[in-house]
Length: 88
Image (cartoon, rainbow, N blue to C red; front, side, top):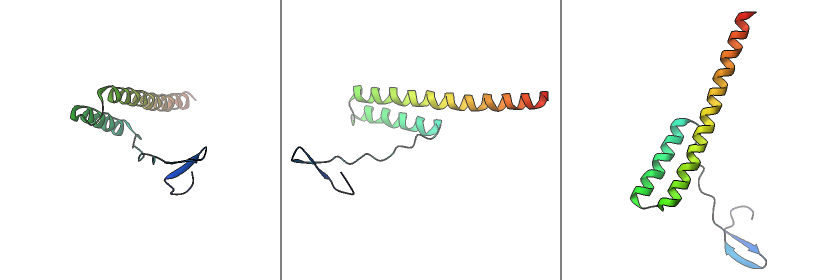
């Protein structure tokens, strides 16, 4: 598929291609929390099935944990650099 075409050919069959969903902001813990809350609201409103929402929330929680781990690693490295520098 190229450009803005909404059709693609697969074994001679022309079908409608589904456009990619907009990119979701997951750059920090606050943004991840907002997305988890949005999934929760969509489940409560019946906009998405409970089982699908649960899966999305699970993956979002994994992303949150990975983000949290990265932040802790960065802070720990900064503390270690500071301590090493002070010892010299």
